[in-house]
Image (cartoon, rainbow, N blue to C red; front, side, top):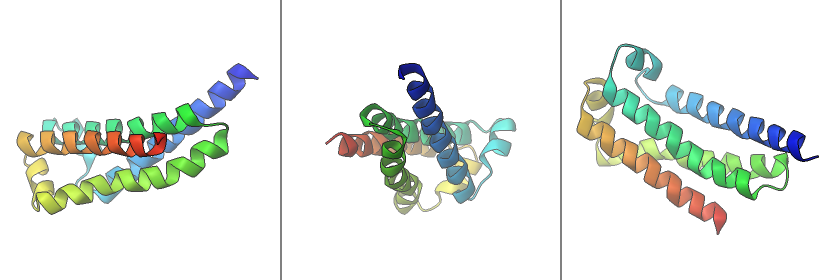
Length: 128
């Protein structure tokens, strides 16, 4: 029972994480993968923040899960909350997308840390 359950829950969590990243990339006004391939470090930092910011609360979903449904039930609202981090940051920095597209490292680092911080708070809410 142990290894198959581990692999199943791990695969489910990674799938949810990848879907969350795809949604995150879809809702942002710039094309992350194209920009990263072109060498835009700011967008790479931002995308890394999205990846890590989503992984942190998902790790808590996985750690506290009894079964796969447990992961799904907790992951959906958690990921919706996590996806809102970009929009919240845009309220603080209205021209954020243009700045990232232009390679502004200050904006990228702020977004990176905001997303990770948001993920940590989100994870703590799950653990509570």
